[in-house]
Image (cartoon, rainbow, N blue to C red; front, side):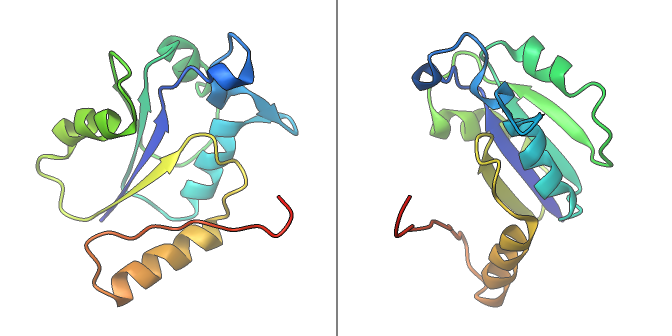
Length: 139
């Protein structure tokens, strides 16, 4: 079993906008939509979107999205950081047996092939936790 948690509760204050960070658009789609599309190809059993700041706007933005994914929104109130978001989510995972992939909602360029490879390496190494990062020569 695979569950995906997408962290989407932040205000995005560095964006200097009243719009939640995950709702900013990149080539016509929100950052959150792009992350969801990458996750769809993983065939997860469930996707949790942890939201908080302007949660209603975030949920409403996905109403007409045509994805074959079971999405559940989890409210993080107050927003006390990433660790707290997972702590809030843990209540939803009490009987869950499987892998949990945690993604930030503002990584619109993450490819499903990259995520699949991460899961493969995780499984091959029988790891308790796995992490990916990148280093660009010219970011």
